[in-house]
Length: 121
Image (spheres, rainbow, N blue to C red):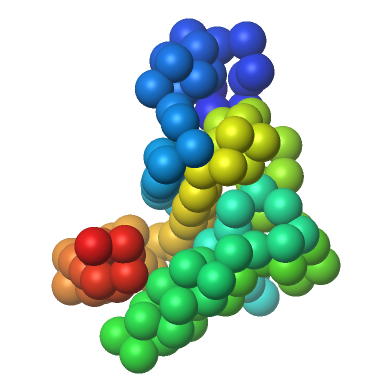
C-alpha cells in the first residue's frame, strides 16, 4: 500500500499533508549485515532530525543508521510516494525500518518510540 501512488492511502496522505506536516512510517525488514534500524526520508539527502533520532536510538543501545543514497539501499524508501509528496510540499518525512530484534522486544520498541518523541516533541 505504501508504494502504490494510486492507492486510497496515498490520496488520504495528500489530503492531510501540508508544508508543516511531519509523517512517520514504521516498517519492518529482515536483512543480514544491516543495522537494527535504518532511517530515511526517501532521498539521498537526509534531514538533520533523522541523524539526531539515530543518535538517540544508538544511545538507547540499538544500532541505527541513516540512509544516505548509498548505504542500506533496499530500505531507503526511495520509491515511497508519501515520502516524495511530503518532501515536495516542504514537509518532513521519517521512514524507519526495524529488524526483528527491535520489533520483538518490548523494551527496544519503547526505546525507539521514545527516541522519536524526544526529537520531534
